[in-house]
Image 1 (cartoon, rainbow, N blue to C red):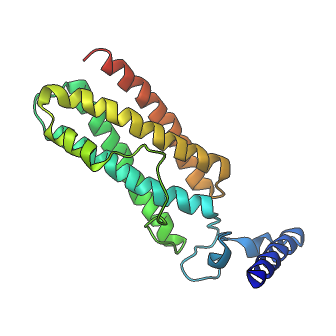
Image 2 (spheres, rainbow, N blue to C red):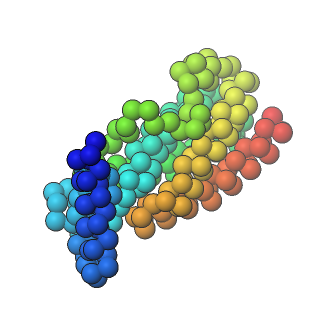
Amino acid sequence: MINARKTLTAAVALATALTLGGCAGGMTGMNMGGDNTRDGSSPGANDGAVFENADVMFAQMMIPHHEQAVEMSDVLLAKGGVDARIRDLANQIKNAQQPEIDQLKQWLSDWGQDESAMPGMNHGGSTMSDDDMTALDDATEAEAGRLFLEQMIVHHHGAVAMAQDEVDNGANADAKAMAENIIATQTDEIALMQELLASV
């Protein structure tokens, strides 16, 4: 414990010295993740790719979250007789989130980070359980649209919360820009889904 504390103290002192010494270039690509700290010269980190733990966590958590939204949309779109407005929304969600999944995976690769989030990370209760997904899959055409909207509203609230955390705590400009876009887009979609729920 003492050695770990000394190591952490030394790392903080070194980072402070680099910053104060005007050596910002040496911090390029840095991940302030303790033993996982890397700079732009390390394998797997692109020049100019500044990132922090918050950026890595955002990508690792948003990938499976987005993947589930795409899966939910696919389940709905496989059913016939669903309200056209809800089908259009499901396609809109897929078209927006799949490219974001691809970009998030690319960032993690560029940063030399794994795609899988650390055990114990959660999505604020916003992901659907296996039972939720089964319920959507088993829903009749008449029920599926309403259930999809109810589930996706909860799902979107979770994405907005994760994106806000990235905006507040992230360091990577591109990741923060994506997070801001997620907040704007999914907040609008939540409002639309609430309107649709009132009419179906």
